[in-house]
Image (cartoon, rainbow, N blue to C red; front, side, top):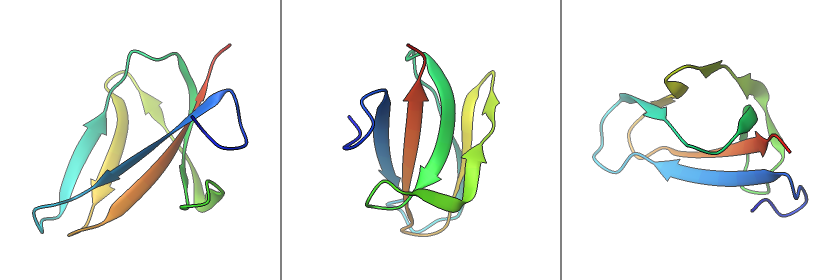
Length: 74
């Protein structure tokens, strides 16, 4: 659960193999909005991530950590 937003969940992911990759985040949760955030759960400058039928498309560089704030429908 997000610290300051009861309607949101924070997901933290990292690339552990030293590669540049594209990944898809899929969930059965009713996601209304997805955005990159920092470790303190503040939205990042790049802002919202597009929601697609497959989920959310993420790009990783080697050993990169991503924090994604998923705002859920209520």
